[in-house]
Length: 75
Figure 1 (cartoon, rainbow, N blue to C red):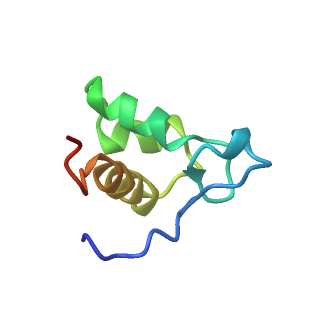
Figure 2 (cartoon, rainbow, N blue to C red):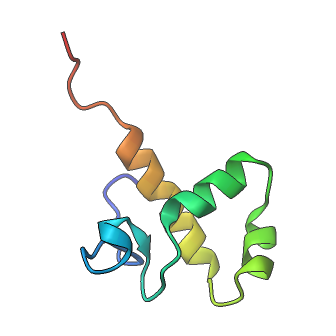
């Protein structure tokens, strides 16, 4: 959902230099996005990272979608 808050994703300058991570972990969002892009399923990720919940992966995808939107055209 475009307006949905992303309460499972956080960015803290003291954790991985501010890279967005899954809340309460040091797992960067890009690791999940890269894994899905390479063909891993959500189930694969949940198995590989047992501390994750399905909602963590979904919010990581929403975060990536938001970050990819172009708000203004650059001339």
